[in-house]
Length: 466
Image 1 (cartoon, rainbow, N blue to C red):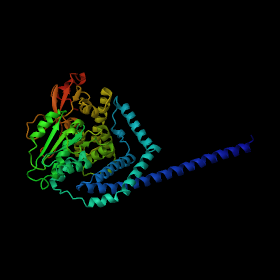
Image 2 (spheres, rainbow, N blue to C red):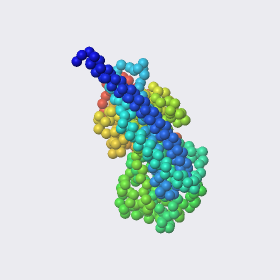
Image 3 (cartoon, rainbow, N blue to C red):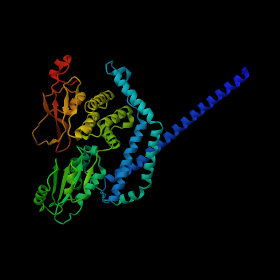
Image 4 (cartoon, helix red, strand yellow):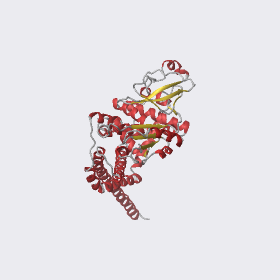
């Protein structure tokens, strides 16, 4: 091949490379423009759907088909917000100037690289499909929303007082818009047979908000809605019971006033056989819903979009917590009071380490362990130099009128306060409601008899909190 032919070949090759490069740049620019347009469309759709959901929250909805449509609106809204946040947010990276050289620094760096790679992969084709699917779902929901909005305008408005709003904020974590409407409808229905108290089963897994749902809804249907002669009995079943025992109990309450109701709360689905109306089942919140609600509580009146790093930390914390409502309330309250990046990242690292420890020791997420009444390891949430600590599932609640049983608060330990831990077994306040009756959720904490490292023995005598 002579020099002239070689130049022709090289020119053709360079031309092809240049053509492909230009085509690639144009394609990437087009894809980027298309992505931005789709995200903007998603924002507008979410705004429309959220407006309708908020309006529905303040109405009494008795039509079961409207409730089914409302559930579709709510689910689509939370999924849409989750997709939007996944595209907007990047994993939080610690400032290199604040990094300390420790034996675990390489592991932490590898975890960050993994999360960063995961985020990059999410912007590829599979996640583009998820964005497109979310858009199509919301567009379908909005297209079929007209009749729902018209019918919603004819539904009676709930009367809200300032105290009711305060209660709503305190219990916002559990959401449950559709389940709330179902319970209100059951409470307002006439009893059949006439004179016999209706029995309303509320069934759900460990700490999904069953009693919070009942307490919140009683405020909505109380006052002028209930006649003075009506009585509401709430019974919690911690285990299954014999039919004969239920018959004996129900016989004792048959002569309550007309229109009286009985709500039975339990983790066991078998208890629903005692109900006289359709049971209300509370599922665990989806990851998308829990992430949204956790972020609302963690930021309070602060606009999350103005603090993308904090928002990214909040989303990862929500993923680590995995729907544990008591821990979510405790943690969100803690973060809301101190919106500092270093503080939030300090808390995130503790939850990362705790999750890894539980997965390593037990092979399960703490939520799955608690749902099966198994202890979880909370050592890494407090201090790795402490003797191993086990948190037992919380089934006990006390109100302000009862004797103080414990002054050790879970949140204080996670922050790193200088609380001196009792020896062996002690009680811990997982979460305390800020409204009457100031319910405290109590759990037992067990200190395993393994000494701290020798270098920390002196420190251990005064405190195990760093």
